[in-house]
Image 1 (cartoon, each protein chain N blue to C red):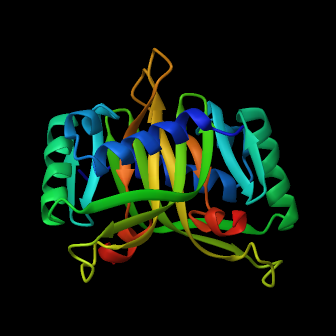
Image 2 (image 1 turned 90 degrees about the vertical axis):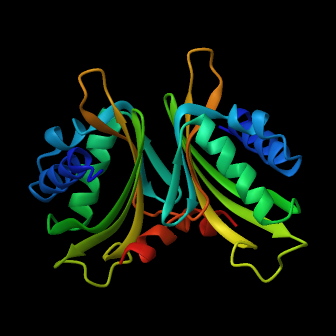
Image 3 (image 1 turned 180 degrees about the vertical axis):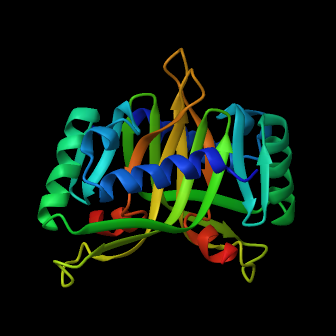
Length: 133
Length: 133
């Protein structure tokens, strides 16, 4: 499986983030999705996730650029795990801890129409285990 | 949320693995689940996952002991991402690359009866990104 359908959704979501089109960004998520904003802060649901993306963009003075490198996708029926080299760049805040390369973890679910939606967006990956310890 | 329901399922699955009760192990998975047996080998579905767990156990001469340390659970509706410090021990194969501590990634889904089942079991975590590169 080459998982093009899921990868296409992820690239389109990145494009919407980079374009600051937050209505479109929100529609890539399930209604009950969870976004890890920071290791200690989660946003739940499309409305709050839209707002969180807007605030993240403002934090970077609108100069945020996200993209994915290598991806590993494991599909199991209507559920998929995506591991991705994620690049977060900002020309305005190069010293920020949020400008970095990360091993991100996404969970996608297929809805009744066959479209893949993001249920869990954790760009911090397994780092969350360290923060908790 | 303390996510006790999911954590209890994971502990019970570990117990079944350690007891070599593979019929019980298989029932902790969805019908279409995926198990990362090795970075280059996946097993799909309860029948193949049962067989894979049996073979892993045989590889360790029946001395395999799995357990979880710290866990981070992110629930989003009927989908959950679990990050876990996983300990894989074997008194028979201490030199094996399979005897180790790992940052594991599991995806759980809630079925119609409200029971959490494992859809994706990836004890190698983001290591899969390195193997692919």
